[in-house]
Image (tube, rainbow, N blue to C red; front, side, top):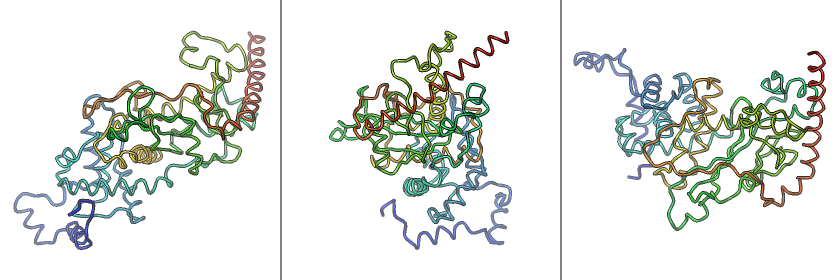
Length: 410
């Protein structure tokens, strides 16, 4: 039998296995020492969440998936008729297996041993979860709905006075960056996926808001493709920035009215400037400094994503088509946890997660410089440059007035 198929009769039998035990069955279980009321079942959300946390291992920080999150999402996919209880396996346990796989890079053998299910059952439910979670991506991964300036901008003394006065800067809704995810692929198909570091990866574009929710994920692009090409492919596939809004991007992307990049050839690295206590010398340096501070949100969101799901750092054993779905599935689950909990204080931004299943390959960071390789975006750069200059010059004027006021007061 194909492990990815399940007949109607089998599904009916599965549901019957989940019915409450009869009075006679309860008496029998009690007579042999089973506690039918107090002993948790493997399908209970509490038990599954405990497994997810306990099995993280040394060096792993807590996954922070609480039972109510697992139950709420299970109810949601049930209501959409995407998953159902089968073979004595509840939807909660199916999703638990899937999260376990992503957070541990667990193969079928490890999943079978941990959840005490056959490999055939594990295979079937992992596939079903992939299909279900990818199908609801549009419900959980989307642009921030608010049209107001985010509180992290309006309440920050470095941004608040300026952002609140200037309507243009109230329209920044997040930041974009790319990550490289290693695949397992045949030698015959490998060449396009070989990146500039010489390793094999898929290039994935991520967009996040200032609450560290991801608003878009574009996956499946060859590792040799530039970040700008991935962005344009996402646009061609339907990624649209809301009218009048824009994202912050790094120097590997074109500077356009919708994707605001820093000035090239101007100091940008925030850490270096802060360590030297450098003061910006002109409007370009000031713009780059504040741009870097705000764009750190996407870097932090990506670190959290990889801390939760270190499978993104290694090549996996799944079919290639399935491997390409892993980043999107991880992003959906990240957003579900983030929006219901809103707490990533326990995740260290500096720690790395050990993954012993496969060797971690050399993963390049995003492109440092835009190569002018996307003609359709090049035509928007003049408007983007004028837009950026207008913001930077107003920012510099406010900065000069504020500095002059402070000097006068002291």
